[in-house]
Amino acid sequence: METSRFDIADYLENKEMIAEYLNSVLEDGNNSDIIIAIGHIAKSIGMTKIAEETGLSRPSLYKALSEGAKPQFETIMKVLRAIGGQIKINPLNA
Image (cartoon, rainbow, N blue to C red; front, side):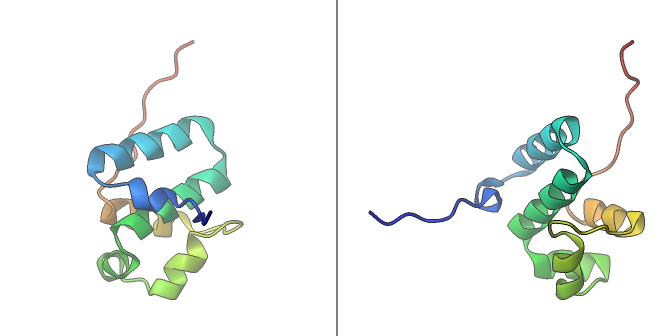
């Protein structure tokens, strides 16, 4: 039996799925998980398209959104805008 490697980017087919995935990671994940999730989303949309919209090169995007990376906040914000997302703050329940 032949198996293939699971890639979440193959399943992020619309904005609702993307938002649900990223919100889940934001709720439960750590910094590294969030950066990797943004990378999965960028890959699902297309790194070339994200590179064009952010003004960053594809290699820079892959490097910034890979495991262990520590991208600048500006880079994260550019990519979030390019993938159609935003950061919204909600008060925590006491």
